[in-house]
Length: 273
Image (tube, rainbow, N blue to C red; front, side, top):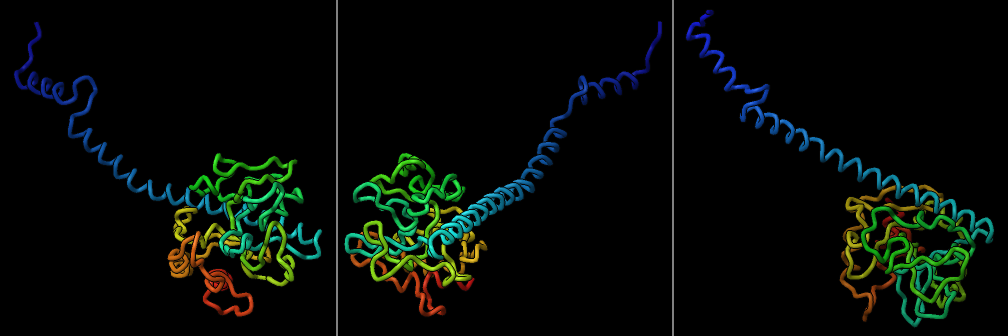
């Protein structure tokens, strides 16, 4: 009968106790888990940044499509485009350039960007909404913002799009207030005409958008770019000090001055950045 030395038996027992049936010790498992956790900690910020960049690129793509739509409208309407703000009911709400349907009136009354819908140019309405929007009131076809049938007239409900327009032209009851006319797109050249929702009294930019580092802006030459938050944040904070119901309502001087390009107004800041 074959015999083993005692040291051989001890060595085999030690090996079995350490590895069992091909397993790992607790220390080895903890080391592996620590390595995995470290890799996740390294990769997560990069993944998050990639997602943020993807949403920003998608938003900019939407704005460029809208630039094409604005240009198409201008070709069919003597160089004029529908941008502005709602000045109905005796109040000038310079932040309401996002209105497709003004609401509060009879059916069919368009807001500042409503003529694009009536001209049947918004066949893919999702392009009129930033994919990062969190608030249902500025998202596509939600219970708080139902989108009208593309082949139907506008309803009497307030309908918002996901971008706001330059508040240069006053609209009253679905029409440009005399003696003004719709804006000439050639007049604005490289100035901002559409942007992520901003300038709402008592609301910070983060409430309606999630591009926390900046604002995506479309210019009249159909270019689009991000304007960093540091450029406009101080002006937005001034506007936040007012109430959307007033009184007083925020003055136009906080929003735009088309006569003085150097003015310290929100849209002038977007022009320069």
